[in-house]
Length: 451
Ligand code: ADP
Ligand code: MG
Image (spheres, helix red, strand yellow):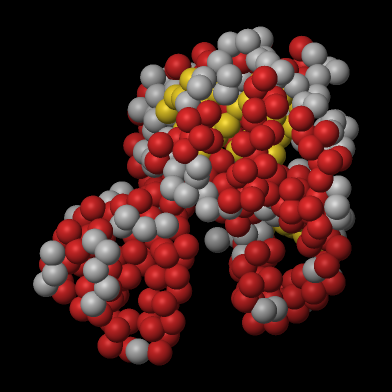
C-alpha cells in the first residue's frame, strides 16, 4: 500500500470520529486518494462527483487538511477533484444540483433543463436488450410528436432509462435549438406543482408546462398514490398530446403494474409505445465497458473486462463503477492491473452483486419455511401476528438483499410501497432493541446468501 493511501485511510478514520455519521458517509467515505506531490506540497483527493468536490472545498477543506497533517506530520495543500468513483449516494443527488458545471441550462418554461453530456445516443450501446427501445427513442427525437406518443420506457434499475431520456432531450435540442424541452422526474413535477399551488401560481405553472414541445418525465412510478399531482399530470398529458407535443416517460414497471394510479392515466400511458429495457447480455456488457473506457486514457485488458462483465450481470451503473475503480487505482498507483488484483479490488462489488441475485421469491419461501407459515400468507391480507411478523421480515429482507424497487417489492407482497417502508423501519427498530431477533434475522440473511 502506498504512502498516499495509508495517510488517507488514517485521516479518514480520524474524520469519521470527528464528524457525524451521516455527513461522513455522504461526503467523505467515498473520497479516494489520488497522489502526493511533495514538490508542490499538494495532496490530491478525488470525490465521486463535482458537486461533492465543491461541497468538500467549501465545507471540509480545513478539517481534511488538519486530519492529513495530523496523520502525516507534514503540511499539505489539499486539492479535491470530482472525478472519483461514483457512489450510490452521489448518484441519488438531484440532477439539477449535482451537475451544475456540466449541465447546460436552457431557459424553457422557466426551469433549467440540464441534459447530461455523457448521456447521449453516441455513448449508448445498442444490444438485444434495448434494440427496440433505442430505435423508438431515435424515432421520437427525429420527429417529436409524430412517431410514438407517448413513448413509455420501463425496466429495472441502472439499465439505461434515464440515459435514453437525456439522449432524446439532447438530440431534440441539437436539431431544434428553439424547441421548448423539459426534463423532470415525476418527483420534481410533484414538487413544482405543490409549490405552484402554495404560491397561487397554478395558472402560470400550467401555461408553462403546457406550452412545451417535449416533456420527459423520469421515474413516473413516483406518481403512485399522489392523487392531486397525478390528476394535474393527467391534464398536462392531455393538453400536450392534443397539441401533438411529444411526451416521453420512464418507469421501473409497466403502466398496468402501477398501483394507485387512475385507470384513465394508465390507459393514456398505453396510447403510444411502451417498451421494456432488459438487462444486457454478456457481449453487450463487454461492449458497454469498452465504450465507457474510451473516455479514459488507461485501458484494461480484455481479460479484466470479461471478469467485470461476468461478475456484474444486473446493473450497468455498477458495471461502470467497477471499471472506474480499477482505472482510478491504476492512475493513482501507476502499476499494472492483473486479473487477480482486479478480483481483489472488486471483491466487495462482486459480493454485493451476488447478494442481489437473491430473489423475493426465495426470501418469501425461506421465511415462510422458517416460521412455519404458508408462502401464500406472504401475499394475503391476513393480519394475525404469527403471519404479519414473518411477512414484515420477508419485506425487510427483500429490501436489503435484492435489487428491487420499493414498488416492485410491494407488488410481490400485494401491498403498496409505503407498507414496505414501514415494515423495513419496524424490523430495524426491533433489531436494535432485541438481540435474539437480530440474530434470527442474521441467520436468515446468511442462509439466503449461501448458494
Ligand atoms: P436507469 O435510469 O434505468 O436506472 P441509467 O440511465 O441511469 O439507468 O443508467 C445507469 C448507467 O448505465 C449510466 O451511467 C448509463 O450511462 C449506463 N448505461 C445504461 N445503459 C447503457 C447502454 N446501453 N450503453 C452505455 N451506457 C449505458
Ligand atoms: Mg433513472
